[in-house]
Every structure is written in structure tokens, then in C-alpha cells.
Image (tube, rainbow over all chains, first blue to last red; front, side, top):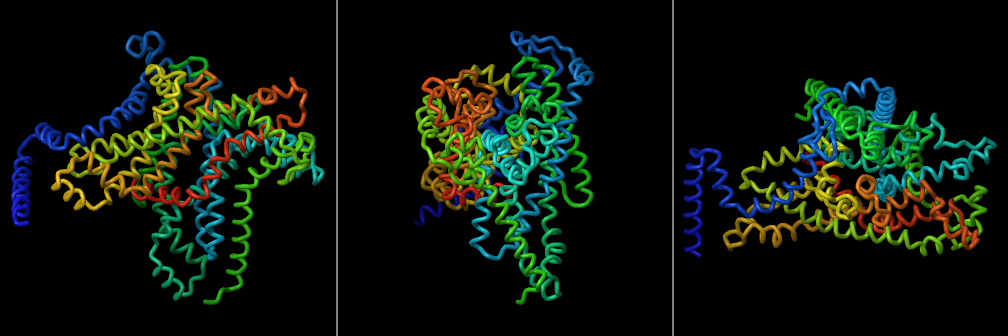
Amino acid sequence: MGDSSIKKQRESNLSINTNVLNKKKNLISRYLDNIKKNWMLYLMIVPGLLYYIIFKYVPLFGSVIAFQDYQIFSGILDSPWVWLDNFKYIFSYQDFYQVLRNTVMIAFYQLIFGFPAPIILALLFNEVRLMFLKRTVQSLFYLPHFLSWVVVGGIVFELLALEGIVNAIRELFGAAPILFMQEESYFRTIVVISGIWKSVGWGTIIYLAAITGINPSLYEAAVIDGANRWKQIRYITLPLLFPTILILFLLNIGNFLELGFDQIFNLLTPMTYSVGDIIETYVYRAGVLQGQFSVTTAIGLFQSVIGFMLLWIFNRLARKSEQGLW
Amino acid sequence: MKKSLGEKCFQFFNYTFLIVISATMILPLLQLLAVSFSSPIAAESKQVFLFPVEFTLATWKHILQNDVLWRSFGVTIFITVVGTILSMLFTVLTAFPLSRKEFLPKKPIMLAIVITMIFNAPMIPYFLTVRELGLMDSIWALIIPGLISTFNMIIVRTFFMGIPSELDDAAKIDGCNDFRILFQIYIPLSKPVLATIGLFYAVGFWNTFQSAVLFIRDQTLWPLQMRLRGYFTSPEALAEVNLITGDFDFNTITLKAATIIFATVPIVLVYPFLQKYFVKGAVLGSIKE
């Protein structure tokens, strides 16, 4: 007993001494010391680091092929540099503007209708007083999050097909059947609604967690002051939810043009390309399938730059009123 | 406390609204289930409303005898099981050092990892990288490129950081090294959170689609989702036997409905039991970003 406490005392003295010493040492020898002492931690992180370098950073820096005329057999090192030629090409290309317009339109609709949906739903959930009902309803709302877009796309196609249930209901009311999935005018609506259907429930979780964190005494005080439920939402819940909303908005705006390949790819048909072909599906067809690697990488780079600019602008705006991401 | 009439009205409409909308989350699947048990004539003439009409098992018999579908099912089972195990291992091994205060490069590495959340790897260079690694048309292309989800890694790291450090100080004095601290103290203490991210990974691997679109040309290696997509774009492939035997107890409508149910059943079956873990994880991940 006594021995071990003396040992501990010594050890702590030792660590104080080394701490003092460490401050004097330069960074490199501090790292060498740290590696020697905690080499197992360094060993543990090697697989993870390799993963992030190979699958995240190499592709990120691989974007330089946007400035090359990339040849498969020469690779990045030996492919000729063409600098901005690929960008000149895409900006003079009619199809690019159509794809860009589709992407921006769908992204805009998703922001306007898709972003507020989970906030509203979370507020509605929060007003439910019957616990068993709340739990059941929430469980049902979370379910579609776990289905793949292939399955959801399949469901959408089946239900909206000529023999599908939607047209069956239309027939009951004497309306003529509609080929929903093949008609341009319905495509974006279907994208937005199916997107909300799949993710609205899951999206409420983060807001519900934030609402749970609100101090109940605020509501009690408001009730004493005569605030009804609507006023409590308007003057307590929403303002206190605002920082969460803002952060999620910023995270969203950075990926503004990245709509998600899976969703569009599984809803698109050649008949709806004119309104539904987005950057990601176009890049897949022209890049992966047709091998125009450099041009499509340039489009991808353009998309990332726009995303980052939007994030930067909105982050500046956010910092003026509240706090931003950085 | 007494409720005003307005509040009662709101409550009524709120409950009704939530019940109706939440019903639409499950009804599409029930409708397809009903179609898959109905006769092709009933399905084609739009008679099916949530209940099978002219009940028949012919569609399911045909689906369950489809070797190609079972092969894809096998591929998906493989990548789900192996992928989840490997992902958990990689995630835990990465999260642990990053949760230790004595690990000097903790901050720069964390920053480098969070940056990859904002700047996604662009599709074409990502595709070329995986191809350069020789993973085209390999089942590992469905597993390795998605090994670590940064979101899940942060969940585990946050949880590890919440474990009191007195525990491992004591273990260190008893002569435990870092690996033993991780595997004998931290992992047993983190079972609930590991169950959560394990489920996230499993669902992710089960739903693998984009990796297959990009990296798998060989149809015998198609995972279930890819096979499903193949059947949607060319449903004739599903009904092939139909033409040979002249058996018309099913058609492409009932077959497509059945394949959708086939690919969804495992998720829907485990879902009610695991739901609480899912939610816990999503909340944990959102606490500290």
C-alpha cells in the first residue's frame, strides 16, 4: 500500500519534470517523445489514416486532372496540361447549362420545401401529449430513412405507374390516367416529395434533441404570463432552436449542388433528362461510362467551388447575427 | 390546467395529420406486398387496394426460385457481414487514439478528417483512384472504399471521451497497454454505442448501390440493390421463365412488387427492435460536431 503511493508520487513528480522539459524542446523531439511513449496509439491510427489519405485526399488532389487532358495510360504524372481548356469547353457547351439549370432548380426547391419540413414536423411531434401515439408515429416516420433509393425509386415507379394505385384512385374519380414518371412537368415535384418522404422523419431527431434541451422553467414562466401554446412556440421554442437551424442550414448550403446521385439516378428516365438530368448523373454518364475524365472532373470542381463559396458567404452572414461554423 | 377550445382543435388536427402522414410511410410497402400476392389480371386492372385480390403464391414461388436473385442476396449478405465487422474495427481503432489527450497529433488529424466531411471526394477522381488500386470488378470495391464513416467515427470518439480517465489511469498502473485498455475496458463499456454504429454500417452495406454502379461491371458480383435496379430497367429478365413454361400466374408488375418486398423485408423485420438504438446514435452524433 505505502509502496505504491510512494511510487505514484514519484511518477507524478517525474511527469511534472518532463512537462517542464517538454516546453523547452522543439516540436520534433516532442513528437518523438510522444511516439516513443504512446507508440501503440500511433500504430492504431495507421489503418484509419491510410483510409482517409487513399479514399479522401488522393481523389481530392486528383481533381488536378481538371486542368489536364487526362489519358488513362499516362496517368496524372504524364498527361499533358491544358490548364483552363476544359473549363472553356464546358462553359461553351449547351448541355452543361441545361444540366446546371436542372441542378440549381431542384436544389432550390429542396431547400425551400425540404429544409423546413423536419423543423415543422419536430414542432408538431413536440405538441403530442399521448406518449404511445408519439412513439408509434415517430417509428413510422423514421422507417423510410433505412430504405435504399433503389427501393424507394422502385416504389415510386410502381405506385405512379399506369396500373399503379395513384392512377387507380384517379380512375375512381373519373380522371384520365397519367404517365407521371415519363412526363417532364411532374419530375421535380416527384423528386422533392419523395425526398421529403424519405428523410423528413429522420431529420426531426436533431431538432427534437435540441427542443429537449430547452429549460422547462422558461415554459412555466411563459404560462404564468399567460402565453398560449402558439406563443410558447413562437417566442421560446423557435428562437432557442435557431442556432441548431442555422448550423444545419450552413452544413446544407455547402452541399447545395450535391443533390445525391442515388435519388435522381433511380427516378430518372431518358424521357425526363431535359428537366431532371443533374450534374452528378451527367458526370456519371459522360465520365464513368464515356471516359471523358478531365471534362467531368472540371464540372465536379466547379460544383465544389460553388458549394464552398455559398458556405463562405452564408457563414459570414451567420456570424453577423449569431455564430457560424467557424 | 384547462385547455382552450383552440388548443383542443389544434390537438385534434395535429393528431389526425400526424397519423395520416405516418400511415403513408408504411402503406406503399403494404400495397406492394398485396400486389405481390395478387393475380396478374387483378394487378393489371387496378383492383388491388392494400389487400391481395385473387390470392396466389405464383409470383413468390417464381421469385424464390430465381438463382440470380439469390446470388445477389449472397453478395449482399457477404458485404454486409464482412463490411460491418471491418468497419467497426477500423472505426474503433481510429476513434480511440483521437479520444486520448496524450495523443499529440490529435487536433491536426481530427481537423484533416473533418475537412473531408465538407469537401467530398469528387466522383471521377474517386473512381479513377479505386480503379488504379485494381479494385474494379472485385467484391472488395463494395467494402473497402466505404470502410469508415466519419459521422460514426465521431460518435464513437465522443463516447470514448466521456469515459472517465481514472479508469485507464488505474489500468495503466496495473500494467495494461493501450490495446488492452481499448479492447478490455473501452469496448465493453461502449456496447450500446457500438451496437448503434454497427447497425448504421450494416444498413449502409445492405443498401450499397453507388459503389456497385461505379465499380462492378461483372453481373455475377452485383449486390441486391443493383440487381433490383437491373430488374426495374429491364423487367423482362425477371419474367424470362414465364415465356418458356407458358406459366402466366404472374407478370412483371407482381414480380417487381415482390422483388422490392424481398429486398426490404430484412430491414423492416429488424427495424422495430433496433429503432431505439438508431435514434440514440443520431442524437449522439449531433451533440458535438
